[in-house]
Length: 165
View 1 (tube, rainbow, N blue to C red):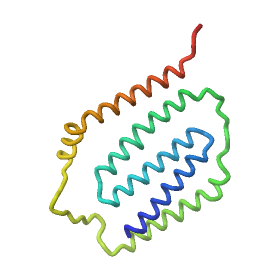
View 2: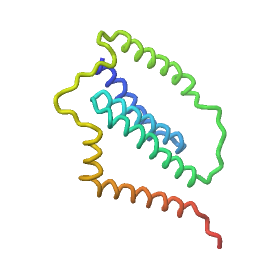
View 3: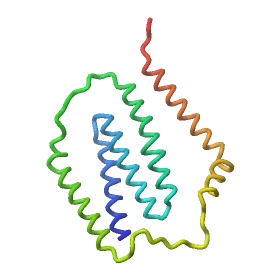
View 4: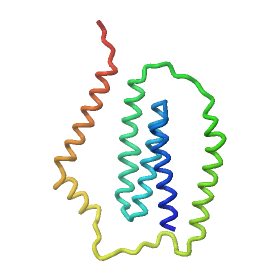
């Protein structure tokens, strides 16, 4: 079951990455990046890294993508064109999602093991241990990352500001 779920979500991540590169509209590209980040979170979950999966959703698919979307909308000065949706999405997207959900449901329902049963080994890394490493041993890279994000926001605002001369 793990192999099938891994292959499904790896394919979704690759398809999302390909869609990210092929999109012409930046908001659609940002949505494709959210699909990639969410698929990676499921892959982390399959590897047994629950904390990394939740951090992937909260940090990357949540906060960073909101920042990207804000910067895209701030810098995008063109006139928005209204479309009625993609024909490819209507013809292939909805049936593909239906087949995808049916496949995942059949895998979960045909599983012989009980869902939610976890075997814990001898060495358990708690969230307290992980946070101690993050905020004690890796404090400098953590703070440098936050300063770089702040500089990126200030740069986007400076680029988007119109000169009043």
